[in-house]
Image (cartoon, rainbow, N blue to C red; front, top):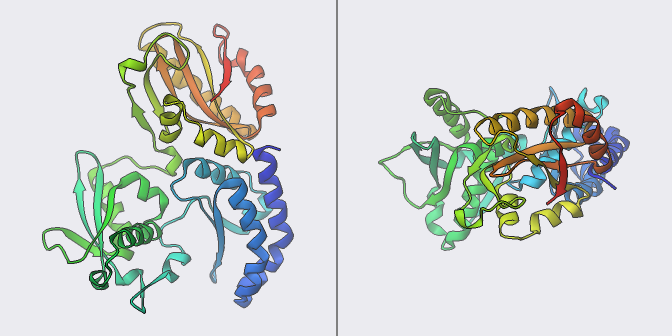
Length: 349
């Protein structure tokens, strides 16, 4: 099995239940709805590492995956949405991560001392770090002072903020999410349901980078000199990745991230080749090859580029593989198209 097979099976199962799901939504028959999606939700959690839920309004039907901050799961749900049949796309709005202010967020409630609270019962006090292009925030509710468990208050605050602003803004712009038991008169604040719009205003005003998806957010590293030598994957001078934990584990010889994807029938790997220039031109070449490779692999649904590195001897293009057989076949065909002077080699992490 491959990730591509798993995605195809998921959508076939969804289509077999689709009419029942739509009717259950229209009738507000939530027990029937739960029965219809329960098995598929288990499948999604097993194969993509994410739960999903469906919503409707008078205007549209919507399906939302919720992979949380797990990068591997975010790649898989994004791929699942990209591979959705047109018949589903024509009826449903598909979200591969939690969007801002979904119906789930609007209806979300938490209980504190037998009292129920909704998003509009919470306030956010925030500080803008213009230098680092990030925002630190603390969530406040008058009842927080009644809770002794500080860890519970922090987790509740993080969950509610994620619901309110969505996963993309949460990862792109928040440096800290915590709680406070008393209002902070020295800081700007807004109602939690207004926080996403406030972030959007700040981003536009300060001209910060924008991202369509959390897997578009790159981190850049310079490895410590002690691990750098001339051997494969040990010569890296600059690393750029959308999956920091994968890189951290590969450097420290841990395999949890790799094993997790293997259990979901995918593979993390990298293409490498000898640097032809031994100058800054190597970085430009790697960037161009990476872009072309990503376009071709995405077109056939075989893989996606998730980062790479420039080393003393080698250049690297890191990928998540959705269909190993198709990927390797395509790589052979692309070898001559991308560069006739370079020998590409593939290695799993």
